Image (cartoon, rainbow, N blue to C red; front, side):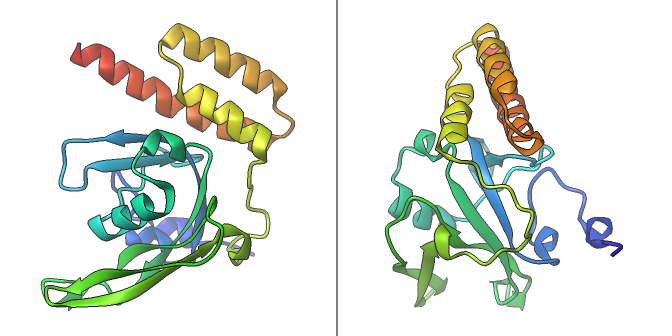
Length: 199
């Protein structure tokens, strides 16, 4: 098989709907940041290549309802994203990113979301255990790996970050697990560096 899906990915600093043309994507959260932009929440995930998922307001409402308002607790949790081609902007169907499945919920979650200015529609998110395998080789971390990722994301200094990451990396049992630690390390390093420059 020669997979050409990567050749149609748009150049951007965030995950776009077009990135999901080839199918849904299941991601593991490594950090969450607030950014001064129209889409103020940047969700970094293992293997994001510097392109975080920036959920729209409707999906942020879903996350708050499902996982709570404290986004620091999202680290290590899993979500499946898909391309919804029916999403409209300016009267045209432009497509958008939607969440189909989440970990850490006990059952399907349905809530009313705004479809147009005067219309709301029911939107349902299912538990991740019921998620279809978009990629049979997709990596899903166990509880131990999630704890390491959470520790990396909680490091309060670059020195602490290097220490925690080094320990976690040595304990890594597979390439996929070590890649997840690397992604968490890079995301936390960027956040700490940004904080230092702002101080």
